Image (cartoon, rainbow, N blue to C red; front, side):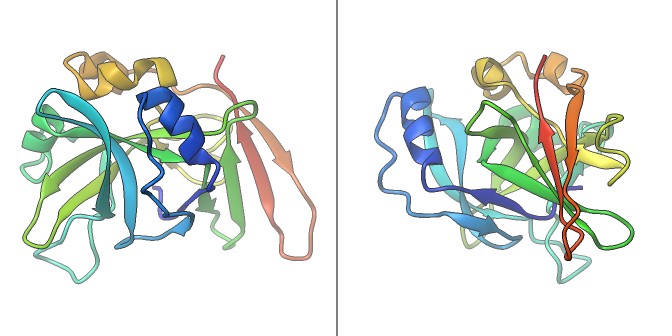
Amino acid sequence: MCGRYHIKNETYGELGRILGESVSLFNIHGDIHPCDEAPVICRKNGLVSLEGMIWGYPSVHSSSPVINARVETIEDKPMFKNDVLFRRCVIPASHFYEWDRYKQKATFDLPGHEICYMAGIYRQCKDAEHFTVITTQANDSVKMIHERMPLLIREEDILSWIGDSFRELMLMKMPELNVHIENEQLSFVNINLSFP
């Protein structure tokens, strides 16, 4: 599960380099919660761009939005199957958070990288476009905190994910992670990810 993530202001410089365009119009930074607007990378009319979308699909069964979709069942669930076929996106984050069963917060980031790229899907709803984060089974480094983690996409695979080669990325093994635990009063845990 992924229930909160963070975007640093500096992230936009890196996104501008990757996308080859100015993304200075975006002023969204800090912690991103469900129902917040956030930038996502997607392809529209053949062009790759950064778009502002709302995190979470509206739910007909609950007042809480649907913020995650499981990669193992995404192509089978009626709520998600058309979106994963036709509307995939990448959600940039400086880092993301998980909480363990004792409510201790863990922070995950990629050492040596400005951005973690989380796989997602999106759709047009009545009010705006909404996205959800795709999750996968946690690898050994994350499962001590939580059983799920975002499906991470490497920078070089962004175009494949939002293009036609997405299925092989859904099966990609998540990278082994480096774990750093800080003993502080708030029991804050800092966990760093690194791709091989």
